[in-house]
Image (cartoon, rainbow, N blue to C red; front, side, top):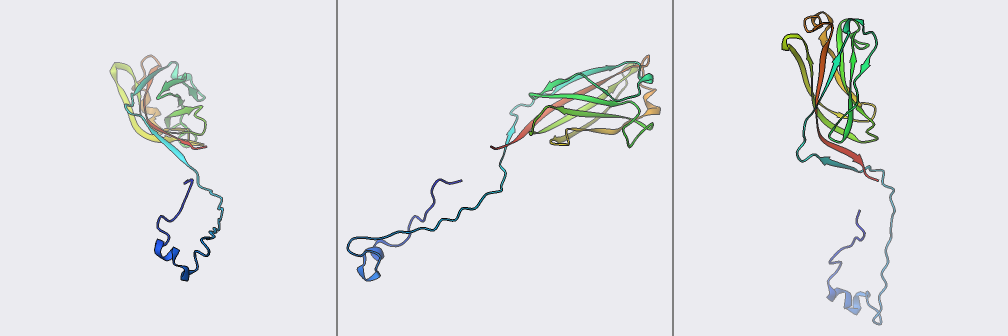
Length: 182
């Protein structure tokens, strides 16, 4: 990391020029150095914090909920210069099948960056009824989705439906990113 290295006061000048010490002979001296090169295995990262992170809201209308079988994905939206989307598992994820709806926030195309974000996911239903969960997560590598496997029990979802539809809303705020140094 340093281009040069040394000892600022190796020995007193009086000691160096005294002929009886043998460092200076006939106004000549010889310096030597041994260099050991150690391959560094350390990885460097650069953390960039957002100065004034702005939350971004994305609304997704879910229609014909009772007929949905497979997972659904929202359109991609941008928050903090990163692309995101919501994943809805209308019959629950693999751990909550036929018990709860599962909702996840997914980071799309971030490369090898880690992204720290806070989020609120809301289900908005009839008569202004709202259910929400809030969290924060480092989205990175294989962990580019995070959310709520047990967002809302399937039996309770019926209370929110307005004509077999509701709105999922994600509010995402990117706090910072980490990237690898070259």
